[in-house]
Image 1 (cartoon, rainbow, N blue to C red):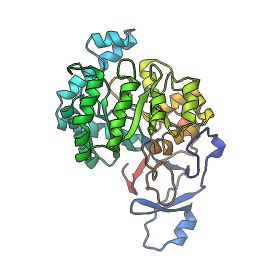
Image 2 (cartoon, rainbow, N blue to C red; image 1 turned 60 degrees about the horizontal axis):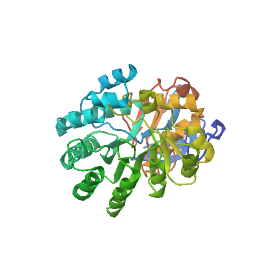
Image 3 (spheres, rainbow, N blue to C red; image 1 turned 135 degrees about the horizontal axis):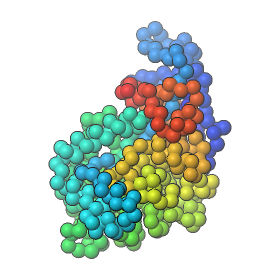
Length: 400
């Protein structure tokens, strides 16, 4: 049994730091872990009325995974974008051909809330099979008050219907919509004025995100937007440093929970993030999908940063939707230890969502865990995520 109970949030981790309980057992009551110890010792300490579940063959028990950055609420497909990109077309050329984020916005807008709900639930089934029991889900393909509300209401309804815990995030500051009459600053003022109050009133989310990039929004106007979000007591997260720097600096300045992407972060940004409480979120599937550099995860960890890893599952740059495969690829290129990968998709990812009771097997935490029919945890990473868990447990109940 791998617990991850006492590992630090920040900095590098060697595989020799892994905490293993041989022949380990969990004592569970309702949805919580009550105790962790040797299985035989635990069984002797409880009465006969307690149900016992044991495994005759060797297996690995570990915390379930948390995918802390997804865009799984969307309509349509961008398969044509992928083909054009691999044929050498640039982002601008694809956009001019009718592709890009605006293509997904168009397809999402013509989708009903029920159709969006069905899509979310289908993708949640996929996440669950991967061993993911908690996932963040962003809006950002509506880009108007009514359409963003449609997305966030679909996410809220999906959270009632899936066994996963879904953490909604408003990404209305994704790009300026083509049909908005006004500049980028005007658009963000409109969203803050007309959308934020409804988000609070309907309890649709507690997180606000923004894409800081040359083709999206500048750090200066996002700072004002975030200041408005703070008035409503929203938490902040940032799409930062994907193609140009500046986003991570604002994330640190505004004390955001995380700065996500960071593919072009340099030494200045690495040191700044390491010296802050902002979690650096690597999104390797986007690097694979776009054919660009990876987040400098090795340098970030060695500098003392907290590094989480997420799938960025979206219809454009990261259609793979497989957290462990993309994290394993990142590990190969960035030379991450297996423990650094595991921490990055469990408790470090959960803490980027401000969730403290998952991602570690310890007393009083949720009983969210996985069973792999393997004799060593190295096998899971050796097969680069193609081995899926044999059992998935959520809140003390077996789902797979």
